[in-house]
Image (tube, rainbow, N blue to C red; front, side):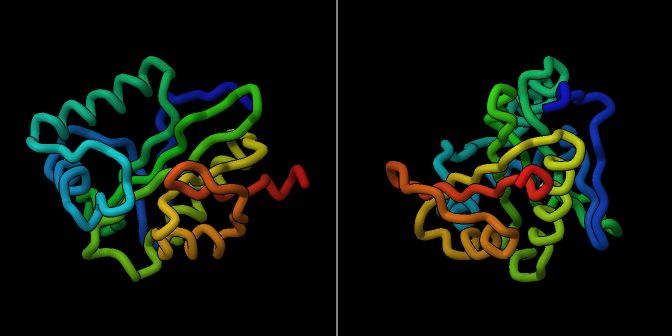
Length: 176
């Protein structure tokens, strides 16, 4: 895998979306995504209880990027509206195995419009072409059928069950 370079942060474009770095102006939207029961239904995170917790999360992500400890963490925005509507990231990067884990959330008001399909396709392309990952994993709740379907549409295959989770994997098509 190429050495991970977090600067400049790689903004990515799709037909309808801009994937950009998080910033403190995203605090209200991050608070919503980290506290709304509909968004958290299948996630194993501690819900945010204040806007300060959302800001601390943004600082944590951006400080990790600056220190080269974190993977890529993009804010998902519509091209015509800079407001964050979701996030998508690579994390748990293993340089030794050339793999990463993908994670994503989308505001319920924007689900069912193919937006996450656009975001995930672009991020997978980046992971395989620029980061030279050999594989990308997704670990998710077994009842999160919409997310499982999204992964399968993008070529991910079921790998195994873990405690309260299923693992799907996508191998880099260039290394098959």
